[in-house]
Length: 599
Image (cartoon, rainbow, N blue to C red; front, side, top):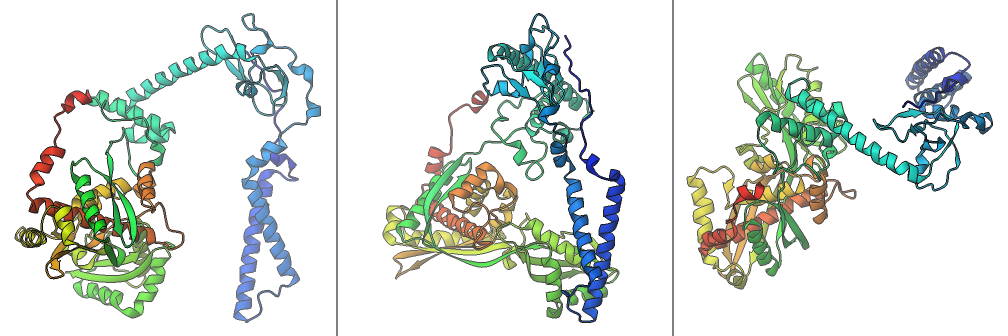
């Protein structure tokens, strides 16, 4: 049954208080603002040219300043019109007549207590008059075919029901709303399956990221005929990844996180989070941390800190391409280009530009500091600014691409191995002889020989590029995934050469790792997700450093290198002692039937 209460008068508008119609008032103040601003700019330009003090104002200048302020105040108020509306449209208590809400139509034998207001849900036990300043929902009880809702005119008095009468209504309303909700989902799923609604547009169409993921997931299962039952959907904040981490989500993958440590590095202790599905990896790294700790800890040195981006541009002739190369590498032009580049960010600061020519094509490798961010987007914006600036001096320059692979990002490249990219770090430790024997179960001589034949000579025979190590990529990937780094940048970040030498008359072991291109950040990207943010917080490196911008990401790079040092030390010891196979057979194999577990 329908229950209606309609307003008898229109709500007042904030614009009613204006002496002129709203469009005329807006036009007046917009014209006033731009006219006065133009007048003042010309006046100040004339004063600068005549060397007159800017603070000395004539009567017309004062009037112009006041007119500018008045127009700014009006325009700010105009854009806040909806905020003002809520106050202007509120009626006074004296305008309300109690008798206007004294009687309502009865519905299926129910009395006036079928009217429900917000205060009912807050636990109001006794009926009491309420002055409604906003539209109030009316719920009709006892209706078999659903729940009828309507609104009451603002400023009317309504009667609140007892909670006992409202409770069954709320239950029926929830049940009905749930049925409607699922019916709507089925309609959307069918639209996606039939290609009417693009799957990628669900978030923007529905305005609910979690619901969009659920609908996309069900549509995918119907389309492929394959179940995603083992892929979790619930328990994840899909709003957190919208527009920055992942598109078209249908769930999330669970990766276990273990901890290794404490890693004693540069006098500080760190518990290192590692996300991995490889058995023995965390345990092995933990053993290396134990050996380093017992020997007094490791130390690290940051050699370079700069992210690179290298666009490729083309000219009509190689001679013209060489002119750009000479222009960019001229120290006299660097300061001007740095000013243009640095406008793109508070933290991005241009460090160098190196050029390489291939025929009439020029590859420009820009390197800049990026604060606590990994910095790919930051350096790209700065490069775009410089390219736009260069068009005035080189109008015949054709920008082929913002990235020409001379950067080089997410692929093994000698330029990163030689020049470095991101953070370049060296980490070292001296392991005592008795620690090598007791904790690592091997000898100094055996480790030195194995490192020379495996990591150095063996990698050279294989033609390795930056791969003069045992398994640096294992540790880098695990720490990257745990802390929200870009896993694909594990490629160049794992460039590493491991050195082992006998010191102190051959009794102790000096071990070091040199990693020229660790690409990490503590802000942006996946670092903002709750799980990854928690792992950064465990290291004490969550977010940007307020005291020293960039220091958090630099410390994270040294922790990555220190963890690699521990992993290299332990794995090489296991190989030297002949324990590798036995360890993996014990800790890296499962007798469980995972197909039955997942089902």
